[in-house]
Length: 159
Image: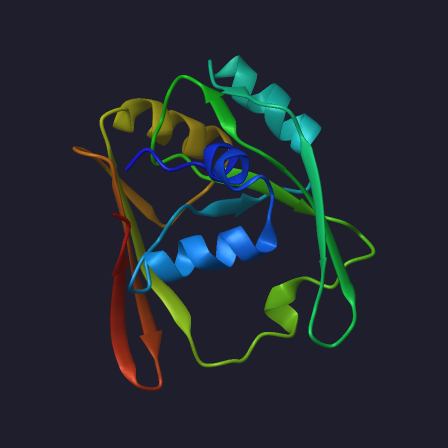
């Protein structure tokens, strides 16, 4: 599973239509990556570097929602060591209402499991960021999320 946002964006040339075509090509709901919300990417960068984990460049992003409001954020990905299942870090702009406050209710993340050949590195990164509730195991790169919803439990996997 070595899918990462930088590679996907580079391949698609940041073309929104290309991204839609790519997503449709997956054929079914599929986890591509996951995110950890941080208050300050620069502070997270410093914390991670002290644990031997380096972030790539901070990348700004934005989009207009269907209601017409603009969401703004910055992201950064783990650059080294190579951790296929590492989350990207996201910091939402203070001017942005977090999307979870306007999303439909009723769905809850019950479990998140990440298998990765670099499980020790991933665990170290998550620990220094104080991320809890993620099960990390050594194995082939794979992410699984268990969601509970009004229609029952749904399990999604990465490729």
